[in-house]
Length: 81
Image (cartoon, rainbow, N blue to C red):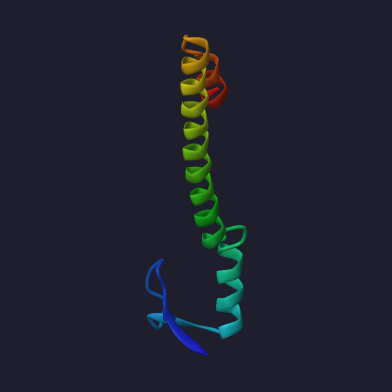
């Protein structure tokens, strides 16, 4: 048993006893659906894909300008739309 002080106010003894399993069960309930590593990986992948898309748009726009002697704005609409 662990003696944990109450955050909501003082109990009759200033703390209440909780079983280790009860603490772990509450912690699991609070953290369901949240995976910090997965969030970090998705954020990194998003940044990479945005940079790759921007680079692809720049290459396509440069190629269009070089070969067709005009600037194609529809490529930017595909990436940012």
